[in-house]
Amino acid sequence: MLRRSTLLIFAFLASLSSTIAYAQENCALPLGPLASKRSVALAIFNSIADGLETRNKRAKYVIKMQDNGGSWTIYEALKGGYSYRQFTDKNGRQMETVHVTAGGGGLGMSVDKCAAAVSDVFYQR
Image (tube, rainbow, N blue to C red; front, side, top):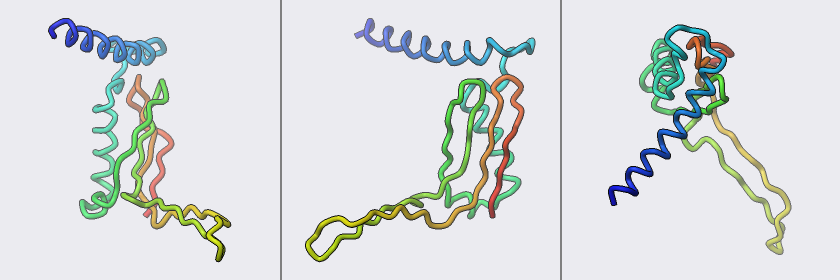
């Protein structure tokens, strides 16, 4: 059992180090990349979002994050905001499908892993 857990920890650290190594290869800062960790980028996002939106408005969203190699893309998406509706004819055959997105708004941005610089900010009320 100890060997299996050791192997899992080693695999986790190897995958994490490859992400950090990618961010560090282009980063010339003495401390290394400032926002290479997901939690740091999320804290930057939350600091800005808390200043723009009320707690009630933020409760309507889920935060989505994507690792783009040298940066993070972070944005708010409505909880359950997407739905599909299929229309059928009188014989039950599918005629068309409509993708519905209701509502909107929220904050989105990119956070550079090296300098923790925020860019591509958009906000909708």
